[in-house]
Length: 109
Image (cartoon, rainbow, N blue to C red):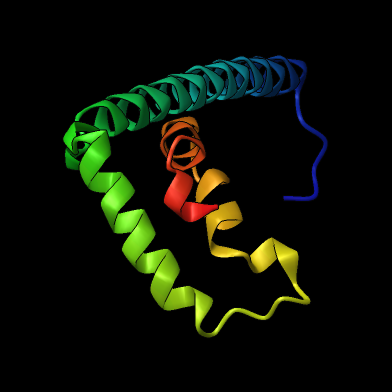
């Protein structure tokens, strides 16, 4: 309507707005907490999935043999002008375990 609100209607509208604004702030805080918890849980899942990966249980000797065979195949096509694509260098960039295995496998070098 076009009529001016009464004092009681104005007071009631202010109460509704204040209550709604408080609830919005509560919801935003809850959403922030949930987002933080989701991130923590996602990181926990990622960490534990990595820990139980079947590849983690591969004996290093077997991985070294695989590295040597794959490297020998790749060296046929390797472009010597692009050292970053050198198969042994690519292997050592995967993770610390692969770096240790590759570094201690003389046949790769």
